[in-house]
Length: 394
Image: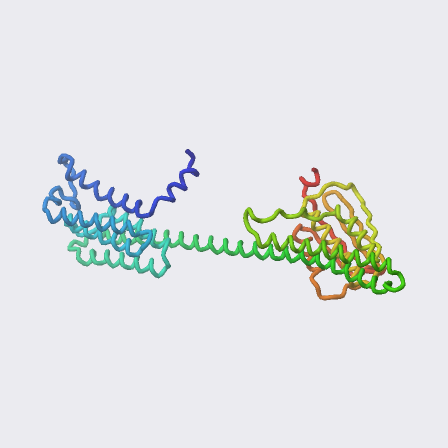
C-alpha cells in the first residue's frame, strides 16, 4: 500500500485517539518497567517502585485516566474543554505518583492536544489554553523545593512549539479557504461574463437584422408589397430563432446537474457564410474571402473567431452606414488572422460592449485585436488568434 493511500485513513482518525494513545503509552510504560517487571538495578525518582502501593495513589491514577478519556472524547466537539480535562488528568497523575513535576513523556500528550486546539480554534482561545498550560508549569516551578534542575522551562518550550505548529496549520487552512473562495468567485464572474458575451453577440446581431429588415419593409410596403412581405418573413424567422436560443440558454441556466438540457453545438466559422447571406439579404452585402490552408480549429478559437466576425458585421450594419462589408479569414501557420472592413463613415457609434467583448475574447486566447478607422476609409477590425501547436498539427 502506498503512502498516498494511507494518508486519508490517518486523517480520519479523531484527534482524541492520538492524544489518548500518547498519554496511556506514557502512563503505562513506567508501571510496567518499575512495578510489574522484576526489580533491576535501575531505579527512577519520578516513578518509585512502591509509589502505587497506597490505595489513594491508585484511585488518583484511575481518576487521571478517566479525566484524560473524557477530555479526549471532547477534543473534537469542545476542544478547549477537552484540552483542560487532558491537562487536569496529567496533573492528577503526578499527584498519584507523588511527583513534584510533570515528566516530559507524560507532557507529550498535552502538547499534542494543544497543537490540535491551536489548529482548530480561534487564536484568542488557543492563547488562553497555552497561557493556562504555562501557569500550571509555573505552579510546579514555585512548589518545587529543589531548583537545581528546572524541567518546566523545557516543557514550556515544547508547549510553545506545539502552539506554533497548530497555529501555522490554522493559518494554512484559512489561507486555503480564502484561495478557494476567491477561485469560486472568479469562476462565477468568468461564467457571468461568458454568458453576457454570448447573449450580447446573439441578440445584438439579430436585433440589427430585424431593425434593418423592418425598415426596408416600411419603405417598400406600398410600392413593392412582395419584397415587404419577404422582409417581414426574415424578421419573423430571425425573431423566432433568437427567442428559441434565449429560451434554451435560460433553461440551461435554471437547471443543474443531470437535469440540465444538453447545450447546443457552439457556433463557428462554418456559420460565417450563413451570417453573410442573412446580412446580405437584409440589404448590406457581405463578401467572405478565405485564405491559407483551411483546417479544423479548436472549439474556443472557432467560437471566438465567429463571434468577432458577427459583432463586427453587426456594428457595420447598425452604426457605420456602410453599403458593403468585407470579411477575410486567413489560416496562417500557428494563428488565425481575421479582418472585417466596411466602407462606411469610419466610426462606430453607440455605448454598447461590442468592442470590449471582442477584445476580451481575443485576450482570453492570448491574441490581440485592433479596431479603428481605416486610412482608406471605413472601419477596420483586425484580430489575431494563436492556434495551439497540437491543434494546428491535428
